[in-house]
Length: 470
Image: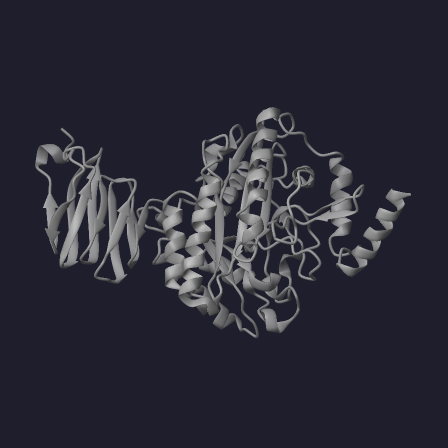
């Protein structure tokens, strides 16, 4: 009797929540998948990622900035107590809302990226827009994020690469409400700007939800709204097609409990242990590589602080880690970029330990290894060379380098940095600017960890024998 009642209640919810959009594809995939894979046997690697519609309040002013720092510190405190199979803490993907372009908020996020707790990506609310204006907004936004080391790859010639979430679940005018987008060609515009994947979905109960469910697939833009509704699944041995990858999170039904799981970690969607089983059962993977499972969840972290930064998340990580450990499945805490890279590695036929492919196609962002409190563009970033052009200088410059024999610069009005090094030795260091700057080196030729005070501009050149690493 209880089961009949649950099914009846579900049917009413289906009608109310637009489930007709995705239910056919869901039922087809569940029938083909059966009970789904089992951790440690069919499933050897589980990629766990959280994408955050990160939206500080405009109205809070300085208090809003402080709340962002408090949020990051609380998250870091929880994350530091957990590790995956690679020894990495839980990673957060802050999809920062660009229509609130607050320098201080993004500077704080970039600082925590540098500390190793996640990465920053692009989130936008817009309405009654045009393709031309949308393209301009995305281009200006990417450059703004680049000045904090985000969405810019750490390479000799850094590339603008980013993931995207559509505000109001309205990707590609998928809600057919001009007030929430109005642009039918968002996929191609995003792709042209350097976007590699959209992480908006699932969009439970909203008409923008694709009919394709629990998938990672390529979508091709059309002149019509909701071009992403169907596409070409990413598969082993396949190749890129279309304009943008749609990277979905789990959407599934627990028939016995009359419960619909839609991957939200919000104050109104509390965590309980059974949810992990449903995420796994959804079976989001690259076709032909079912042993690599992706669990992408979403949150509005600032609005759901009590849930996301409290006991529930501690319990989620502990139970997920214990489940994988007991089953012999490798757990990987990943960012949106890392999940995409691992999926592309599967497409390319890679197998084994999925954690080896976090940087398979798209290099890490610059702010993983470099932080600046002044807005700056990194024009080169390799193990041997770092070149930084400050775009908005300040008198209290602070720059941190975590992967080079230059450790930090503090003080003065720095306008440019050019570092050449190899094998732990600095060959040449040039710092342009005004005032005095404290320079801290971890150069093999300078074993002292004491900072030196220099007047700007400053040039340091190593002796030839040291430069050669002798």
